[in-house]
Length: 426
DNA sequence: AGGTATTCACATGAAACTATTCTCTGAGTTAGG
DNA sequence: TAACTCAGAGAATAGTTTCATGTGAATACCTGT
Image 1 (cartoon, protein in one colour):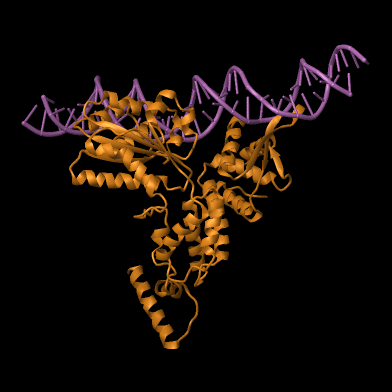
Image 2 (image 1 turned 135 degrees about the vertical axis):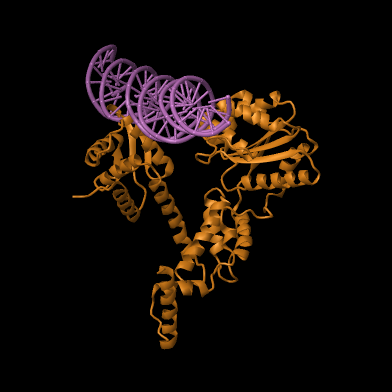
């Protein structure tokens, strides 16, 4: 017999039972039933997800017009100037560029202009974060597949050439988070991309680089720099009032009426404005606050929910960062956690000693101090630890490491790592 | 006292190595005609 | 003879080791008063 059928019978019996007796005890079935029938405080949560692309981008009309002006020649099958877009996270760069690309592609299609736009995010791990993978990804966007490894890089370039050069066309290539790419694999790849045009007979490529780093172009090879940034546009940060408007517009449609209490939007905007006007963060914050309110069965989203959302986002980020790291990373972090209760500040050498002991205990091979040093630097980047390089004079130079996280989170992290590494405390 | 030289304990950088995953190629093998 | 199998060469990549060089200030060591 089939389990589901049994359950079905059980379920209907339970409901019948409840109806007859009018009893209202809590069980999981009731919970799910309530969950379904209860009005959600959300109307349409997708509006608050980071994947949502609004049809109108507020406070960016002029910048979008600028971008459009620069890229417009492509509609006449002329190569437009290359463009470099700067702006901090959450200033609408990506959104605006995607928007322009989409509309330019639509117009091109309507007028049968041979134009293609490609958008690639260079930060995506295992997709486009190396030279080979970037080109492979471009080929994939053009509708052909390339093996993930095994081919020489030149070969992939050749496939790419022949693929785009088979007819006269303009390719608008938007590379998001381009600074990540160059910091990881060097700027040779950009040089190759800009040089492609000279070798193409029919097609032409125009590059649109998007960078979070405002001084990205400064430490670029001069040749690359001149050909990559013929035009530059800077996206300024939003101020608190602008973020308020953006939030209000989204929340009006994302939540039911009167769900969001007065002052929540303002505070949310203030939080985000403090972080250099990151609109995406503000929207995330509002969404998580809403989710918390819903989980607590509250009818309204309050300022308290917002505060809680702020810390939840922070802890979730750290927990996610830690759990996705390899085991050796976790063990190093564990060493820090073990050492932490005794000393508030720690040094690389101390951590390495503990780490070596732990390695023996759990049968890991011991990595060199050089490697541990890099790992500590990465933890610092992730915001899990605070590291500062100090000199203790005669007693050498080292990282001074402290933990800025709250106690509850530390305990949780420790448990998580113990579980994942199967460390048993005596 | 004031100046400089030394020294520690790592940091930081570059290159090389290792293991894994994957493709391509061509020799050897098999099966069918 | 065509189709198939399979080992070996060659690539890309992540993670690491090895080797080399850099570094900031507390201390040790001078020097002249």
